[in-house]
Image (cartoon, rainbow, N blue to C red; front, side, top):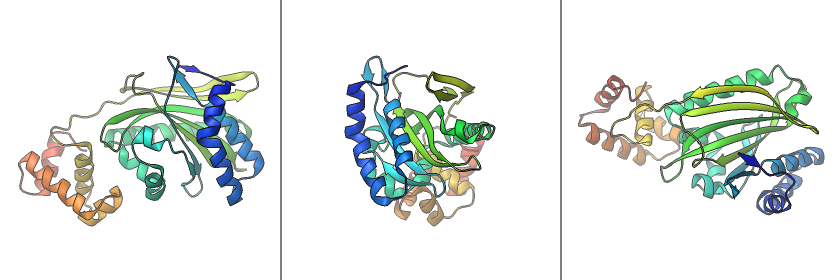
Length: 273
């Protein structure tokens, strides 16, 4: 991976796509002071990723970590995930987890736990000068998988060392990496450069799921946990009719008579836990 820094072309691209609009939103809301805005601006200029001399598609989000809500989302959501910005904001932060397979969700929980356990060992100043990088695979709106490098920075941290704001960059690296081999690195940034202070490797292998789609497995896994059709729809941010359609397709594909039989069949074949 090759990262361009202090490049006028990259800086102009960042300013055009994110920074100007984000500054306008944050300034008008009075939720983020000028010093923190400048720190966020530094993050955006340093996180433009270039591979094989090609600008990588990147999605940028600014999160209020206390309320787990968006303060800003870049318009490049459409390019990276297939969803437009209004859809992302309307569905809320928790909805993003529905784009992950069960195996991927387990991996994400593990790596995030490792990250924040390590951050607890750092001082507040070091956390604000740290960059976290790990990769994850999720599903786009069209159902295709996309491999993302998730890059996190913490422009505001409270006196207890808990992030208040999180700058989140999602880089599409689908064409460059092995989806099963994952890494998490944490760097400490200074004027002299960046020093790696944490590194861990992971292996993520998707279970065979037979004829069922990613979404159908998600629906069935929710049913296996005892949720009703209404609760499944609410948890997955889809309509009641969509859940019923998925259930009908599941029964047809597995040639079973009811949801209970479908759940037992999939557990037996280890397609769901």
